[in-house]
Length: 538
Ligand code: N01
Image 1 (cartoon, rainbow, N blue to C red):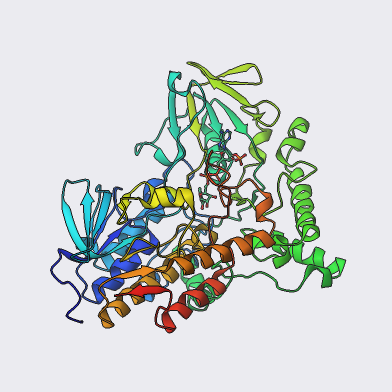
Image 2 (image 1 turned 90 degrees about the vertical axis):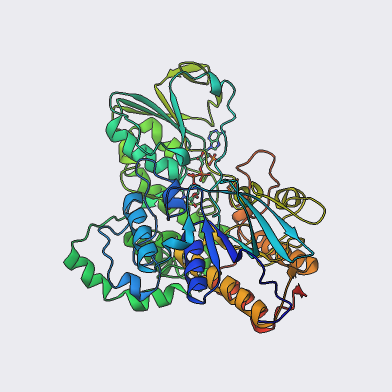
């Protein structure tokens, strides 16, 4: 380490967030003898799985790809389902923390409220909610991309006399639904899972749908230990493969152009992917699904016709699986459903189509839509998140002019590689704006981004760098690259959170880097291999 590096700090590195990337970074830095500490405002390790414990919360990636690739972990641990629920995932994170021996380096129930970079000393002064000020040379944010819930802004919401909850702020002890009349607003991945569970418990469930979810069959499986031991034998090659595929799954997109496929081949591909269940119909599809209207429409029609077979109430067919696509297939995140379409056949479930009858207001007793008051005991707001920018913007991290990252991003989505922000030295983040974030399988992205961050820090120290900062021109070029990929695709045609269209007033533009893992990995490692030409190093 060079004499320029300031060692007179409380810590070398402060990590914020105990999800997949945060824990991985912490573990790697502890192994390298860094003085590092992690803070998280939750109850324990798990990131999104610590914060999302609404009824039915479970992962949409197969368990062989939804865990760390460290053999010291996967060789011993048993999961019981192909798509485990939040309790099992929380237990897994606790197992990881113990197995890696990183618990002493983590503090929970403590948020980082703000941080200021002391230019003279070359250190971050970090303020935590326990009233402490700590200093560190580097600040690493692993806050996740779907962390900051959207606050319901329906007129009258505060007058409702029953219980109301956002999906991501569910009470730890759960909510009794038995004998209750429950409204769920929102049919994204959170809404679909809550609706499934609620349909089995509530006296009466009313779903308020604005856009139908083009949900795919999950194909859940349960495993005995013997069965799990058998599939575990395939983990090594499968996990290696996840590092190469477009979205970090064990399967990949098909790169043969749709136009070069015969009609027979097209039908075979769609049928095969449909029958595999899970995300194959989306992420093992021909890549033209995301670029070619004809390919996309064929997939939509296939989905619609298969899904309609499940819907028995005639008046709901057009609402749940319309003749015309509500948006190009796959440009809003589909989710994996188990009994989502079947549940609408039950007598205790109704659906209000908000396209025909929008919500007018919330009253003391319930929800008024299309002039009709729907009286309920519980309202669930499954209305999503201020994705990719919300969590980092909420932290009071100031540049030399006193401007926060949130202020900057309101004007311009400036990031270099979705890792660093010009004006904010010695700071890196994972899994947020202009990185693949939630457009890649969670642990694959967490390890990819986390590994690079650790190598970056190591290199800075080897080079004796005291201060690093991403170049503005490089950040503008990266932003342009993110927009160019999106502009060529069908993603720009959907009002999705990928396009920031879900938050009123947010600038509509692509949030994650959607160019795929191989392109992102290449960009990260080109920067590293060339000695960080797009950073100003002092
Ligand atoms: O949020 P969403 P989410 N009036 O934004 C509706 C990850 N995740 O929490 O589509 C009425 O997707 C909105 O309607 P519309 C995953 O990456 C993963 O469900 O905008 N409705 C939509 O239906 C996911 O993509 C998992 O027309 C309103 C819903 O609310 C991301 O988190 C599980 C409304 C919001 O859907 C976010 O998912 C859960 C309004 N004013 C989450 N505002 C798994 O892996 C919004 N809506 C399983």
